Image (tube, rainbow, N blue to C red; front, top):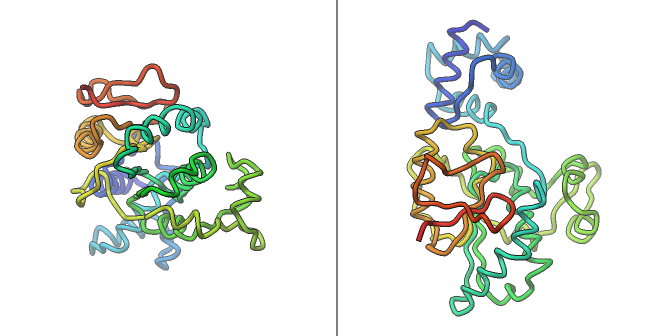
Length: 271
């Protein structure tokens, strides 16, 4: 891949997703776009880039961007945030919303669904009182392909081995050959929608809890600030924002403060 071709892919991905590909990522671009080139019946990534430059194709460009988006995820990822959710954050929100009898949660970069399904399993296992309340669990991602996988609720043996307790696997999944399918009652708890965090957002319900974990590390500071400003408008005043362990709002958005008394990257709006 030439420097010009790499630069074209970087600009395309940044323009359409806000994700910044740093220098030295040529190997990653080649590895992820080679299958896309073959699916388009092209001999190489260079030919793929040449076609896009010669005759812009929105569908093909979307496939390129989706292939470059990192979809790393796992059930109950990092564990500590989910333990804090179970012991502190969710009990607090349930108490505060006792009269409203409603809870709204948004997983803002859900990938193939392990994060929102982990939340659904947590609610189902530990908060039976929510069965009598309205719980809106929204999960969004910019990739239609990964959302289709998420909606299916089907996961490989490797995927269920990563973070999912064996007891939950046996209780809430059914095996079909080499895959495991999540039971329909849990799948129905999650609504999946396509949403690009760096593009205009559709109207969203006010959220009590927003997951924005391990996604902002791929954006430049301006995009991070814009996203956090929007999240601040969606989050209810006493709600919680959950970021990844390496992520922060410092010097990006003055609307948030870190909840220092909580483990796991929780933030709240500045009063």
